[in-house]
Every structure is written in C-alpha cells, then in structure tokens.
Image 1: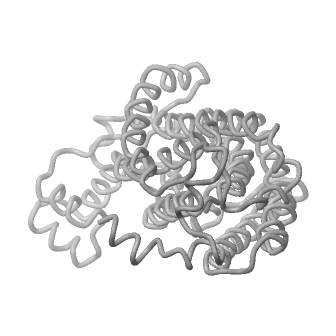
Image 2: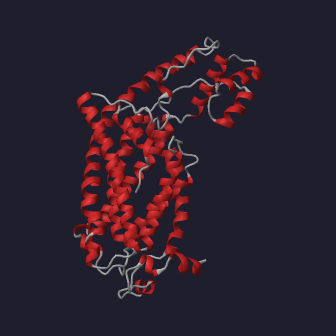
Image 3: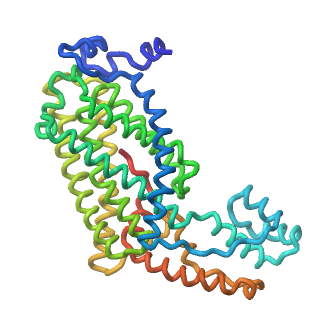
Length: 401
C-alpha cells in the first residue's frame, strides 16, 4: 500500500518544488520532527477519544450549565401509537400527500384531519430539544476556544507569526515543533470526530453539505500537513478559530433566550469575522502563499493546488460577509431581522407554530397549554439576530476551513 501511494499519489514533482525529494526533508541538518503521511493515522484513536470526552462533557457539564442559564425545552404532545402511520413515517420521513392521506384514511379508519395532526405531532417528537442544541454548541465552543488560545500561545513567539516571509524560508526543509504537531493532530482529530458523529448530531437541512464540509476540511488539513505547509496552515487555523468560538457562544445564549447577550456577541462576532476573513486572511495569508512564496521557489503543482483551495475559501468568506452585513443593516436600521424563508436550518419555524386542536384536545388540554406557553417563550428568541444568521449561512453553503 505504501509503495502504491508513493508511486501514484505522493510523487515528488506534484507536492515538492523542483529539485527537492522526500528524503531531503527527513535528512535536514539539526534533526527535529518532520511531517510524514503516516502520522495522520494517529488521528483516528484521537477522534474516538474526542467522542468519549464529548459524551462525558455534555452530561456532566453542559446539561447542568444549560439548566443554570435557563434553557427550556418545549413540551410537545406525543402522537398516539398507530402502527400504519408509524410505518409510513419511518419509511418516508414526511407527511403524506393528498392521495396518500386518502389511502391511510381507509387503512386506519381515521379522518384526514386526525392523520395530519398525528404526523405534525410525530414530526415534533423527532425535533432536537434546546438542551441538545445547547450541548452541541457548548462542546464546539469549548474546543474552538481552547484551540484558539493554545494556537495563539504556540505561534505568538514564532518568527512567521510576525514576518510571513519566514513561512517559506528553507521550505520545505522545515522541522515542525511539538506544539504545532499536536495543534494539527488535534484539529484534524476533532473534525474527524464530527464526521463520525454526524449521524447522531442534530440533522439540519444542509446535512449533505455538512458531510461534504467535514470531509473537505479533513482533506485540507491532511494535505497541508503532508506537504509541510504547516507554518501557513497554523496561521489559517488560528484565523478561523478566532471567530468560531464567538459564534458558538452566541448560539448558546440564543438557546437560553438571553437575547441581549446573544445580540452583543453577534456584534463582536461580526467585527472579528469581517476583520479576520476580509483583511487578515487575504492581506496576509493568501498574499504570502500566492506572491511572497515565489521569492523562494518556482511554481509547481502543489503551489497551484493549495492556492486554489485558499481562493475558494476566500470566496466563501466574501459570501458569508455579505450575509452578515445584510443582517447588521436590518438589525441596526430596520430594528429587526426577518427570517430567510429558505433556511429553516434547525426546523425551528414549526416549533413556533401553535398546534391545531383535534378531537382529543380536552384530554391533553393542560399539556397543550404548557406547550403554548413554551411556544411564546421560544418566539422571543426569533428576534435574536444570531438565529437568522445561522439559518441563512447553513441554508446555502457549509462553513469551509
């Protein structure tokens, strides 16, 4: 397998400048750790460790913290047991059409109104609770915050953090410090754990895009490590982590219906995002990979490949910045932010709808009144600008790293 990879995938003329060989990287004077493709295999056990740690974190820390902040879950009316309707729902995962409803009416002996009500209640049962969404956001917040602090601490004293020409001096014969090695391994393992947990995490309408995003992120981090773009790669990860934890923290307060705190965090997130993604990233990172690097080597396939990926990433940044600025404009000048009817990323629109009464309403009147109260509490969160931002971003393109 290793021979085939070396022959077809890791050909030197693809990934290294002219005249450089893989052996030259490992035999550089001074010793030290050098990136090797086989190092990436260690990220798999690390990913499983992240999954176990997340399981403990959510139950021991996130759930009690959500109660402390006042996160409330809406009480939903459970659909009664109807085997025919349950079988249809599990097979199609959607309400029946008019013709299908007529067929189910004959099979179950229920009216069309009761069938529609049953499917509405059954769909609500599968929606994730605010507590679950809070736990997922808090886990990502903790990782992004720790990654940003650790990454900044490991890079602030490096020469390439202040002078980006140092990213290419002696490239690719650049040893990797132990801290930067673990920075790469842990980031890659984290995204691998997200990919492994995608089937049990909250399923949004951009489920397929999320899977593609995680795979693309894993590929980009792995490629930059194997080709020893580690110095530039650490800068790219640091730039993205600087705003990611702010977004996740704002989502946490959104689920807790702390509207003012959520809006304040959104403003901070927007400022950091616009500065890091529209100024720092293109002005420093892309400039050094696209222009400054040519002072040290002639263009080769890896140069074009890596810069193409960074330019695509920058295009996504511009698109998301447009969405953020539009949200800020509506929030500041119009006083509110209207929903994007195409998003509904977490299917929250239906949560705010009042359940239509059926013939069994008297039996569960108190339960429905509780649901109505919680629905009003949930409607307060609709004014939170973060919810609209999250929905608009998730409805179009996944966040790329």
